[in-house]
Image 1 (tube, rainbow, N blue to C red):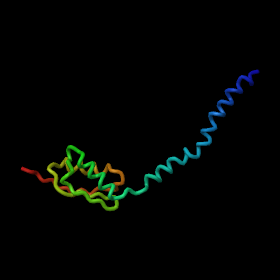
Image 2: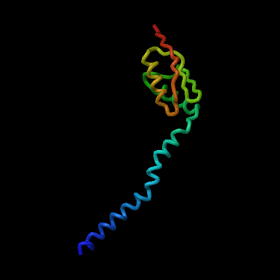
Image 3: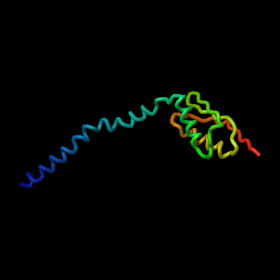
Image 4: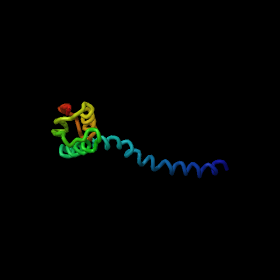
Length: 113
């Protein structure tokens, strides 16, 4: 009698485990699939556009006067800024763009009287 009362619970537990067991290989492979997608290089043209957008959209940097060059994921910033914090922030913003491998900051701080 006791076995009959446990049978529905046991069957329910088995039914709930089946999708997990079937999906387990996909769940295990997911990190490898995601990391493989992340390793695809971002084109330099796209990096250029994204960096320019970040710089131009920042209230402190106001990136219109900066020159941005991208070669193989390496961003070079050049031109003049008025404050050291603008130079530093421009570099930080460029580093945040997906696909940027490194940033060469050649910005010059030129104080305008």
